[in-house]
Structures are given as structure tokens and as C-alpha cells.
Image 1: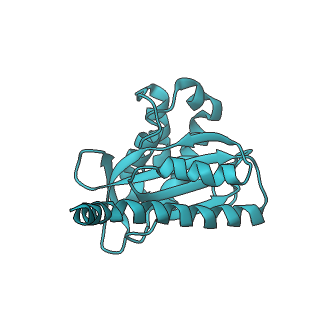
Image 2: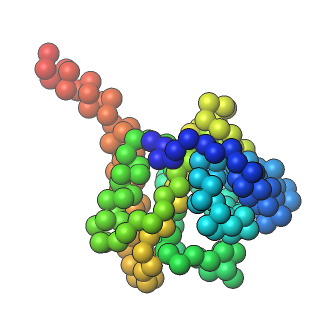
Image 3: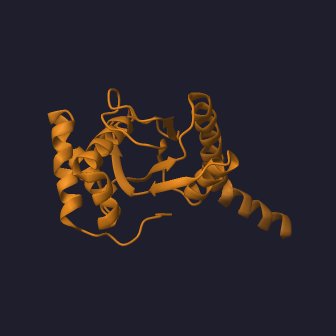
Length: 200
């Protein structure tokens, strides 16, 4: 489910995480730093150097602010062209981001949505985190998987640059595809039990 490679643990990832603290509300600084550390942990040194510490920190801070609130049971999806004025960072590509409960086939499903539009995927970051939220869906804490919390997939995909109309189409298609994934995963055991009952 996690599309990343082995963590680098390098100084660049630590510097990015530290820089995020200055780009979010002070009350969220520690949580945002932990979020950024997990988001960047498995990027290679060349990838980290390509955007630079401040560029990655701005991207992670923007992703964190957006991911802070998510309704339980519903994937959060956004497709946009990063704007320094609104997002705090710039990118030559369009971006699709997802925060949802972890499940099989999420990356495959998002890639299918991108491919269906004939677009090229340039970068995919896919950390899986244990995220603790309050009853309203507000993010309270993040940790590496295995600690207290519920595992959530955080996906950041950079694709060919497209216009606003295509972004809306991609976002709608991704929302449907991810909802279908969760419905299939949630229904799997019931379908399995029903098939066994029919077979008997």
C-alpha cells in the first residue's frame, strides 16, 4: 500500500520538517513537523535536493493545513495548480492530493484516474500514517504506523499541467474511484461469507 522506498533518514528530511514549524500556526507546529517528517522520510537525496528545503517545507505545510480536517469515512481529495499566494509554493505540474483511510489499491486507483485523461504522473508521494482525530475530524496527532491511531493514506501526485476544467474532472473522478475502493474493501468479508453460504 505504501508506494515509497526505504527511508533515507537524511539531514534534508530533518531540515524540511524543522522548517515546517515556521510555516504553520504555532499551536500546530509540533504536529506539523511530525507530519512533514513522515511525508518526506522516504524521498531520496536527489529528490529532496531538487525542490530544496524551503520548497518541500512549503508544500508539506500546505498539505498539512489541508489535511487537518477530514470527515470520517469520506476520502478528502483536491486537484489544483499550486499558487504561491494561496498555497505558499509553486510547481510546474498540476497536483492531486488525497487523505483517506488506508486500504489496498488506492495508488492503483488514482493512477487509473490520471491515465484515463491521458496524463503523465511525474511524482507520487504516499506516506501511510497513524492519525488521531477528534469527533469532528480535526487532526490531533500523527505518528508512524504501529502507534495509537487509525492508519490513513496521504497521497501527493504531480501530473502534467492542466486547466481548471480538467482539474475539476480529475477531482470528481478520483472521489468516485476512491469511494469505490473503500466500498469494495468494506464489503469483501460479507461477499466472501455469502459465497461460502451459497457454495454450501
